[in-house]
Length: 128
Image (cartoon, rainbow, N blue to C red; front, top):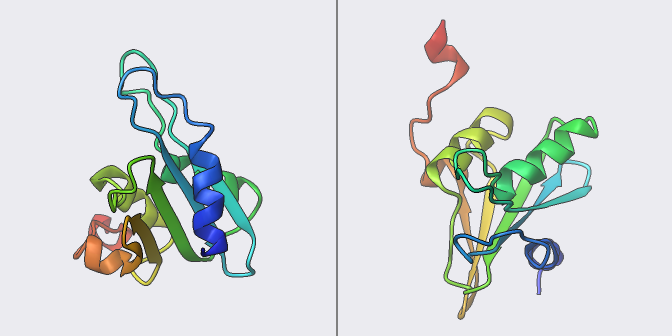
């Protein structure tokens, strides 16, 4: 098992998901090999809920990291879950289209690029 996916699984075990009952874990690897994990945390109004990928990248950024190599995402169901649209946009902002996104299903780990999952992402250049 990939160590990054194992970190995502361990984070998933800490999920707070009383409403959806759909735990997700993520672990992002920085360019220097540091790993930061995150899990989803729900609140009753849903709009204030945090997604695992957002938590992982926020933890990494707060530790001063600005360059990322890979992110692993998993769910309890091992159903190949990928980052949602909102998380894809957040990852595009901070990690870029070359970020490797690892997902997991019952057949094993699959690798994608963020650019494949979110082609033509909205970017800072579009705001100028």
